[in-house]
Image (cartoon, rainbow, N blue to C red; front, side, top):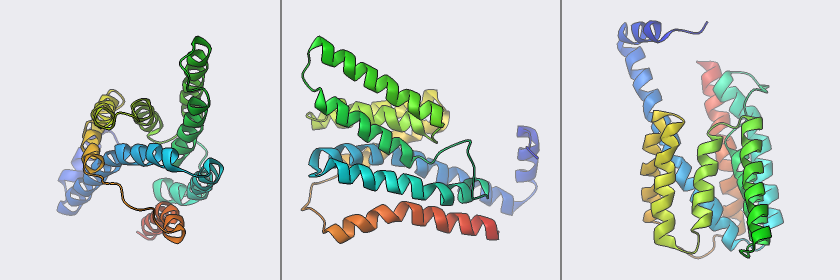
Length: 217
């Protein structure tokens, strides 16, 4: 059964263990929203450096689809849940939007209309699929893409876009803190292919472990 706010506060205040669990949940939510600018930056940066956009798109799509089952297990305790989609789906939609933005990069009137249409379609897909953190993630992706050639401005407006996400929920105010790792990021040599592929497996693996723990507890 769903608890009211007063009932939830009563349960939390009745036990030190419940208080600790509630505190840990809040901390984890803060860490979760702080990751929004980081993932948005990595997507934009990865798109700019990708030698094969099709391969990048297929990898992201595979991660998003594979993550659905462990995401449902971790969040809802079931293997199938059609109401929402995991946040990785927004990365796929954001990548598709950037691809079309890049194809029509010239600032002619027709291209501007096309890019506006593509941006609107991206928003609609995120809303229709009801992707978790979808609109905040997409907003930051689009802000960083628009200023991709001005690194200092990209960081500034990326953080501003993350803070603006507070209109969706006060919890998103903390997402602006996620711009700090982006600010201190320094480009390094390209990682070996094996490491890059392994990184794609981290997200679904974390979800799977979290889902198993939630079921066992």
